[in-house]
Length: 187
Image 1: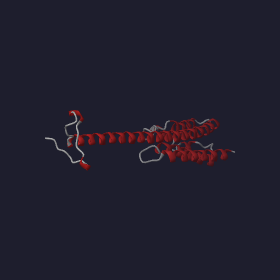
Image 2: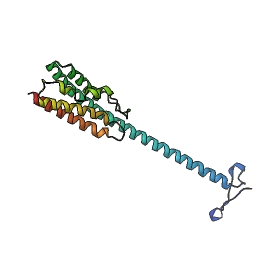
Image 3: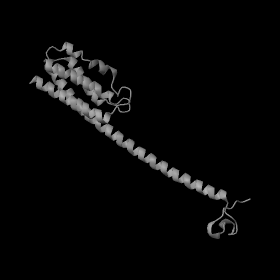
Image 4: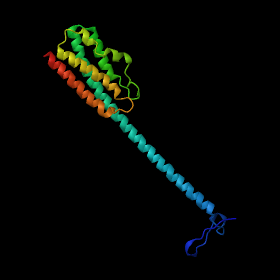
């Protein structure tokens, strides 16, 4: 049995598949409406997925730019510490410079536990180097301590619930300021 829905204005149902004399069932109309709704939902889902991918790609690009800024600042800071190591002949300062460089260079946005920095670097940058470096001025030692602390903070910006896009450039700025203070102390 076919259910017919009344049409406005006295129009009659026609089924083109049966030669024009049959009726369109409610089931066929509901099925067509369901298929249209499904197609619309699939189109909406595809648009939402494309937008999410665009937002994610933009975020990754911003993180990559922030990591690049941090890596460049860490490179400048490491060069300054290498200069101190050359001046004093200190192997510990050379290791410190390498650790500072690694904190910027090895940042890994995919590593949300430690930011991609090796645990050994934490020990090198712990500040113990200051105990053994008597040839540095007090202000150079303070700048060196600031460089180590800031370098250690960089990987933590990548961990869960942090903001590497905002925090890494800010830390890079402070790292450059610490190096500038250290250079002024030597002058």
